Length: 315
Image 1 (tube, rainbow, N blue to C red):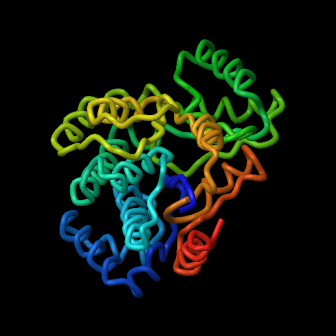
Image 2 (image 1 turned 180 degrees about the vertical axis):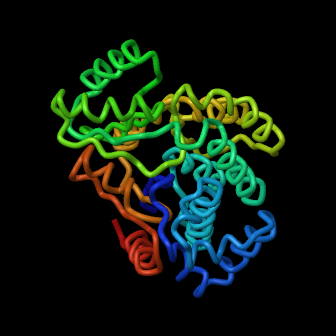
């Protein structure tokens, strides 16, 4: 059997209609949607299939929606005896990876990420935090600009996601992000794009929410995993449940080291890296790290069937 890694998308990969073709085709998918609706106590399915977009992009809805679709696809692949050698996820996607590998049950995970979404939403005053993607500058160059802004404006702005070469996301107060947009362009950034998120995620401004998240995490039942997961915070493999729990708390206010995770996955000499869930964002990041990488994006029935057919071909 071919050796593959599964990677799981985070916020920004959601789209109206996500998971609908799986719902219409597989009883397993219908069951998962029903379980999610019952556990959450509202109809997530309608928001996912019909919108409006403002509802789907609320963090408390986006996170369970993404985990739901990723979990369904993972379970359907398991029915074809397709499981990963190693897994990882981007931010929220780390929870999807942990669910798929059995660290936590789906039923507990879907409620946990809904609550995580609410915590992230309320951790910082509405409209006062922001994030932006910086294209075309090195980490050191960005850090220099951020340090200056932090000192001059007595405010907070930090590197939040190291996604791939030339793409770094920053997070902080709206004042600091507004200043950074101007100053990073002056420093040579090709583009600085504000992100449509509701807070300064993966920055120290999220620390106030960490203890509450830790309580929520500790209320769930966790298992050690046999499939290693590359953690966002360290870009190294974890399998031990106590380490997993601690890193999920730290992940809330720490940078996502996704470029390093991709580099480490590529060094595993796998046959492919497979994005499992809505969208193709992570597949694009993998290609930016190594354009010759063999990458699949399994997000709908067509790509699902295509990937299974490839897995069953002889090497």
